[in-house]
Length: 271
Ligand SMILES: [Fe+2]
Ligand SMILES: [Fe+2]
Image (cartoon, rainbow, N blue to C red):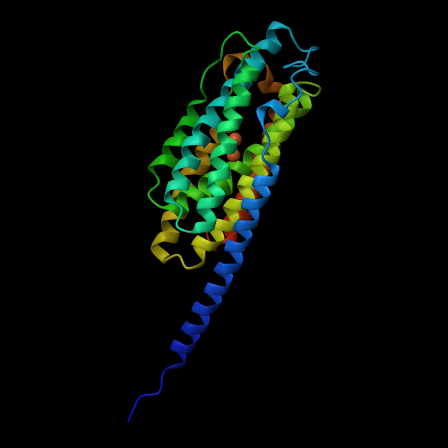
């Protein structure tokens, strides 16, 4: 007598069907980000080069010059890394919608480098690299799986740097740098949102082993990220006391954000 199919199998089929539907929905979300990124794409010549000073005219003392030099160094360092990391995602993406989307992100990151280098012509030289940013970049490049790469770069990093663009834009108001940082915040908002959409696709049917791998990578990533936030080169050392409260607030907000984010994929990290 033929055995009846156990209910578990039916449940599995239903679960699998639900995953497929959810994946299609998330891929459509990702495709919408592709179209949004195309609409939002700007050109370096769109910045008001003829109307605004490159850096704020009221903040030109040696101390401020040192600050702009170090801020620009770090922004250029970050965007150079983002060019390589997004190119890696473009070549590794496993879905058509994702490949299309990453063509826009690579162009965004390269344009960011171009615009920042034009702004950096206003300072005599660049400053030190943030060593923790290089460590984060190494973790990103060394990650084996697409899931780790998408979640670390777009889930975490892109979202967490946005408040810094707002801070710089406020301090550099009325200058090209201020205007540029507003555009960087918008672009990175899209990079983050699209990363969540793609991570939702990838994590929907991730195996327990893969989930562990992502979780372990985030555990490594996060403490270095905090060191990256706290690090200040000599040119910005004078800000450390002034910014202590702000730093503590930013880190606290990031911890809450990190918990909410990993919860989205059923992961946990101790922070
Ligand atoms: Fe960027
Ligand atoms: Fe970005």
